[in-house]
Length: 156
Image (cartoon, rainbow, N blue to C red; front, side, top):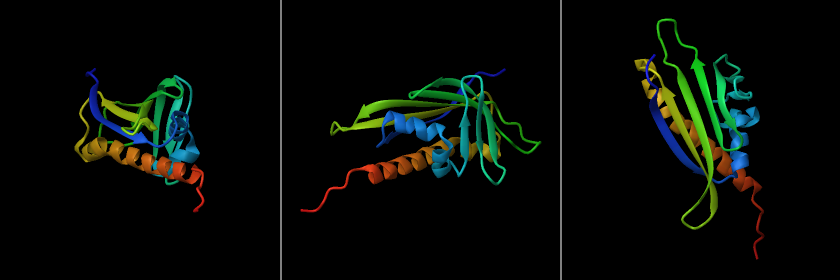
């Protein structure tokens, strides 16, 4: 068995509470809005982690660590053609409160992906850039959600 290698790390600051960000990562109504139209199922530690779409695309995995609302680590497998062998993959989401330079409360999300072997060439680009795209979509979704929930100020 090969050693685990860090494949990618993406950090983003989101205008949402720690609890709201956790919900966005673990509730299917939210993931469908930013995670390639997929619905998530997140069990307890040792149980299933699953992403699925109506077109049949799916990812199956296992919850390795679940510490709401700060840490989620999952192992996952994506279906590939029979002639491609994917390494084992793990993804860890770390959520922490943070302050902006203006001392405004925000939330930092760090997504780290790990593999235990080489990623096949057809999947290299997706394995390196996919998390950046997903976290960007998540940030846009939650920032928009935050704007919609913000109290409206009337013009004077």
